Amino acid sequence: MVKKGKIRRICRGMYDYPKYSELLGQQLSPDHERVARAFARKFNWRILPTGDAALNMFGLSTQVVGKFVYLSDGPNRTYEICGYELEFRKTALKEIGFKQQESGLIVQALKALGKERITSGVCEKIRQQIEPEKYSKICKETRNVTSWIYDVIKKICREAELNG
Image (cartoon, rainbow, N blue to C red; front, side, top):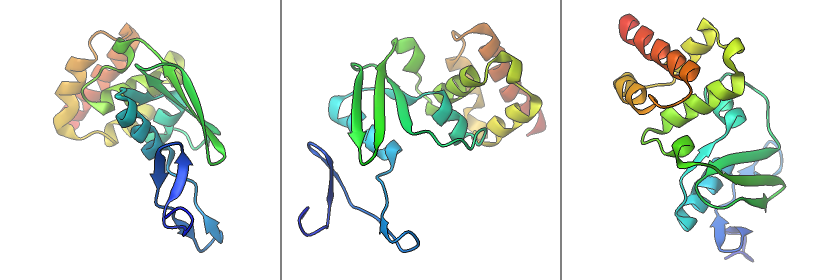
């Protein structure tokens, strides 16, 4: 199937269905998020995108990264995937052990921005990306993170409940 071009070998034991771009006239790179999730399933890891990716997911940054970094409860590993690097960094379970993926993404995005760069606009952009029924779960789940991050999360969730 690889020789016929039906599937593409990403790395040993991992394949995808290649997508072709008419505009570019070539195959597109594999989706880094899907590849990272496939590694997590394969090795039974918990993963969470680091700050830059989290900022992109919330629309707080348009910067394109050349190296995709994920926090993991597995070992430190780096993979070369079709022209980009996919890195997994071992971290403590308290950093990635959230039940709600949004909780971890918010924490990573706020860490990447830093306390001094948090504005009401940032809070509003994050709030728009969260489903209202998850506010209380996120607040409950992030109680033990750094205090200033938890204060911002409480503000995001409280204002959303007041405005909603």
